[in-house]
Image (cartoon, rainbow, N blue to C red; front, side, top):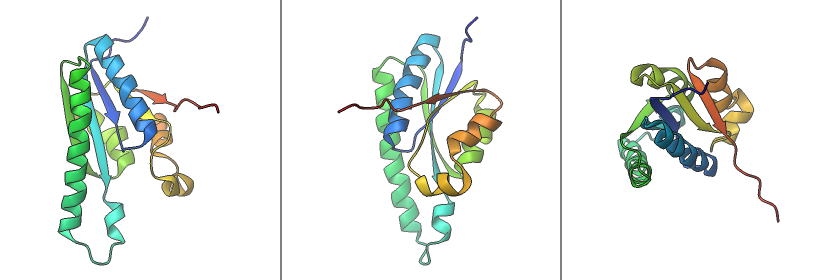
Length: 150
């Protein structure tokens, strides 16, 4: 018996993998008439090493994220998803994507790309996707970027 999902979370970071995962999440939301929660996490650890920490920089990053999230929102609405929300959170992507956000928003399916933008973190401490698949309390669907052949 297939699950009927009601609250689907899609985490996006601007990568091709996240964009592919977004398209799948939209299709699943349509099929289940589910709420689609689009989430972007701004990793605050990236600002800790900036010697001249500037609130203007944080504002610029936030504004860029808002613009991108509005584009994702519009794509989901235009594709026919009835209820769409987007959120921009600040903090640890692993914790927010895997635990905090799903608990707060009663998420029953998390959709993620297999890899994201941060290759250095993936090498040093493991990917967000790997962490979420191991620790989330709800279903997790990992979407892989299709291989291209030349």
